[in-house]
Length: 339
Image (cartoon, rainbow, N blue to C red; front, side, top):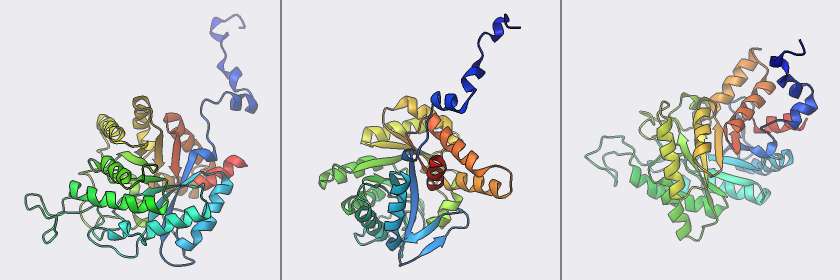
C-alpha cells in the first residue's frame, strides 16, 4: 500500500492539527475586516428592537457614544450609518439638512470616537415620502418632465441633491460618503461637489454593483425605506447580469470612487470574485439583512449552528475577494473570534 503512487501525496497531512490548519489558512477573518451597520433615529434613550433582524435595533443619537466605544473595544474599525428621519418630503430634504439625523449622528460618533471610521450612506429612499432613491417625475414638481412617465426616477435632477447631501455629511465629519442609489454619474457628481468645497480628503465608498435583490426586506423595515409604489429595477442591477456589474464597477472607478462595493454578498460571490480580478481598488461586500435574517431563522429552528455558519459565510465573502465585509454579524463575530 505504501508504494502506491496515488498515495505519495496526502493532502490530509496538512490538515492534521488545529495549529497546522491555522498556519496554512489561505484566508483570514478578524474584527478589523468588519464594518457594522447602524440605524439612527431622533429622540433620547431610544432603542427599538427590529424583529426581522434579531439583535439589531434602531437607536437614538444620544446612545451612539456608547455604541462607538463598544465597537472600538471589539476591534471593529468602522460603521455604516443609516439615518431614519423624523420628516419626509419629495426631495428628502432632511438628508441635506446640517441639523438632520445623518449630520447629527456623524458628529456624535466622531466626537465620541474620532478614530472610528464613519461610512455615511447617502441614499434618499429613507428620507422621501415616496421611498425612492431621489427625485421622481410628478405633475407640479419643478423638475417635471412631461415626456417621461409619472413616478419615473429623474437621474440628473437627483444628482444635485446627492451632491448637496454629500457636502453636509462630509462637513459633519464622515470619513466616506457611500452613495447607494445606483444612479448614473453619482460618483462623479459627489466627487466634484466635495472637491469644490475643500473636502478632497473625504472618500467615496460606492455601492458600485448593487443588485435588485429580494434579500433587502428586513432592511427596508429597519430604515423605513420601502417604496410607496413600483420598485427599483430601473436603476439597480438585474440579478442575471455579471458583465453589466463589471461595467458599473469600471464607471465608478473612472469617476473617482475610492472603494467599490458588491451588494448583496453571498448570492453574488462570483461577481465579487470577478470584480477582484478587474480592479486594484479596495473592495467591500455587504452581507445584507436577508442573509443575516435567514441564518438566524434557521438557527432558531435548530437547523444549523449560528456561530459556525455566520463565521463561515463571512470567511467565504473574504475568500471571494472582499477586503472588508459590512455585516450585522460584526459584533458577534468579533466576540466569537476573540474567544
